[in-house]
Picture 1: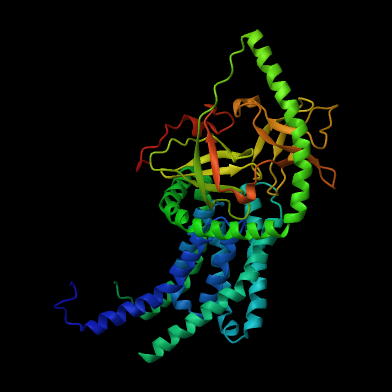
Picture 2: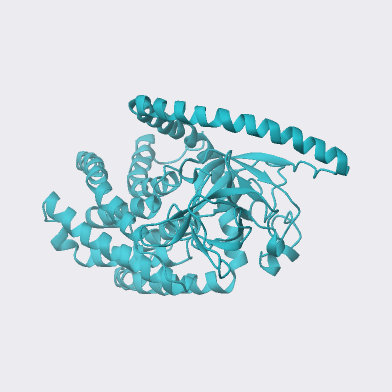
Length: 179
Length: 289
């Protein structure tokens, strides 16, 4: 054992591991969802639609675990995996993260339904920005339908994802309160 | 861990978002300036993840197949009537085909015709969607010692599906015929007229640039054309359909929404690919920039 002979008691190490897992969970879970979204299920735009709710939710409810550099890396992962123009996903997610962080004080007090409606506006903005960047960087007229699909999937996924994430978040807070 | 004073840390925290947004623009520039580097990074990532996708894809495709089967069960009666009718029609075609085959064999014997060798192919499993929101592409898992090359032509069991555009050490990306960047030279079998099949991200690519005086007929078979040296002639692509808005479209034979396995044919043709893609030695030595 490496920990043997250290001044810390084993409980401290476990506790630190526990805290580390809690701090790292939002980023790793979102990355996991992005990777999983690449499996072909016949829904183009799924990957962008999966990363957006994750980043929106964690930015509002656990901003310390979803700082801007992590959002940048998640956006990079999404852009590289989805073979889209590099930087478009990064920029979209960073802007969503920045706005959600700025309005966090208001957003965190809203009911579930209101948060969902606000998320709809964010998803529409993200889809629009993604569409504009695709046209600008790809230098061609992109059809609007895939962007609308992406918006629809993101809006439809949010309640299910947020429900699961809220449960996890409450469990994490209970664990933190017990310390 | 470097210990920073609290004001400094706060200032850094406030600065990180603008700096990272600038970095995002930098990434866009980098993606435009050095497309090769980005492509390599993408394929390295895809190579690393393709075993995971391969493992996840199996239960997912099992669920999809179950759903499709349930749909088929639901439509069983209507489908049966259609198949019986089709079978009747095909029986007549079979008689015609057998007569033509015999006649063809006779004529070939008289001409001492040398047939084209049957092209070699290998199969690869589709493990991931590699298109994002605005592109239609799939990622194939190839074995570690694969000989998949850029420009190879991918067919599913029915017809033309797409072309290999990026190759990694364990995976390859196939740009589908429906992608907005896809341009396929085709021949209309009825009139032997040439045209270009242009992808538009929808299920049916458009038909463009057919010669004046010829109108593609609804139901005309579309096959690949050897023009431009990118494709061998005569691979089955689809059937012409006129849309309600009055555009000529191609209903593809390949079922691009449910691709499981693709056949990769190597016809030794490398037309249309950008010059650097052809000049670059392949397979690429690992670790070299």
